[in-house]
Amino acid sequence: MENSNQNTFSLKKVFLISLIAGTLDGLAAVIFLAKMNFTGVFQYIASAVLGNAAFTGGIKTAIIGLTLHYFIAFSFTLLYTFASTKIALLKQHFILSGVIYGLVVWTVMNLIIVPLTKIPATPFHYEKAVLNAVILIFCIGLPISYLTARKIN
Image (cartoon, rainbow, N blue to C red):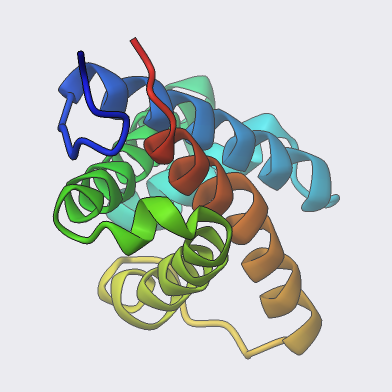
């Protein structure tokens, strides 16, 4: 009989969770960033590596951005899932862990990753930062923590 608290790691589970979290986060970006449509949201992500050329590349650069978006979701899912095999509290307190992880993802993306990309620096807007943090809590942190804590076959 398998122990329900057993700390196991499954790459299949990581892919599934990252697909769910990445889709939720992508949809939230398209819905809540009212000035951007689907193509614009993912061209913005592609601009991290392509610079301003991403905005003139049409659907091709949007697909590059979509791919990059899911890679980032996979990376954050992989990190959390691996950590949860070592730190039991992440599974035991998945709601608190998910909220904190969403804030960690926001911090890492906005203070470390984005400044290292070709995305131009923009002034800090408190309301936009709060909205982005809430999106990352509900679309990345909580789904990843909840689904990691559950047994998925």
